[in-house]
Image 1 (cartoon, helix red, strand yellow):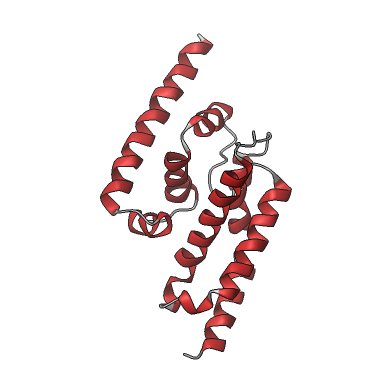
Image 2: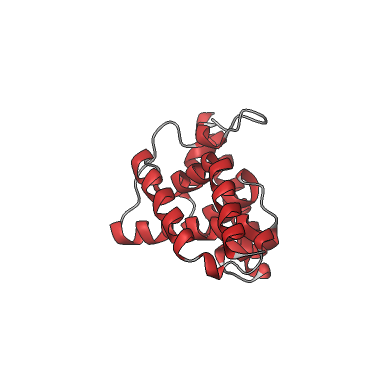
Length: 167
């Protein structure tokens, strides 16, 4: 497969999945304009680093890794986390499955540290396998499994707190 064929596959993948890419970027920055900028910057990075894609079958994890890293870099540059608006979890809904507009879940996810929130989003909202999450986040699989367990535990505790606050 020549370089131009890989570029065509990347272009096709990006165009076919632009909503998922936007949702992922938005899950980090919680701002529409910033998320669009991150996706655009990620596309530019992907085009300029097409040579780093060794296996054309891994375009999805390769591009998600670019988006995650671009999002994290963006947040580091801003030195603050932007508080999300009411549409945060609604942006994850593809319309085909569950609706994630649970306000308590939204609050609990926002309170998780970035490294835990990233794993939850990639694993459960973007439906990546643990191995793919580890590849995207450039971490060991066992590290991801441990953080996933801790993240789920933190969410469970936080959701219980919200439940009991209502009583």
